[in-house]
Length: 75
Image 1: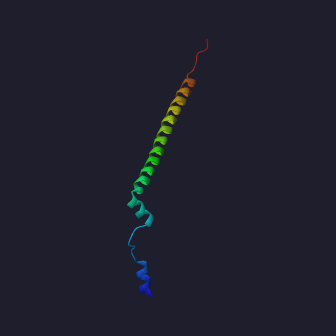
Image 2: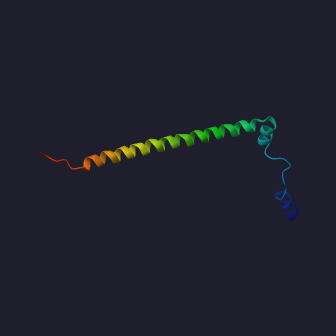
């Protein structure tokens, strides 16, 4: 009984997952990888653009506060 359980547990599959093998054989796996890379690049570029816009807003707000704090002389 123990030898049967050990043989079932330690059995190495002959092939990988069928879907991955099929996609690799058809060349579609490269399309999937390309789409994932394009999506991640889009997300990265979007985050960079948001960071730049936020930096510009922070800089404008800082300048706005600096001009408000400057005392004005009343004549």
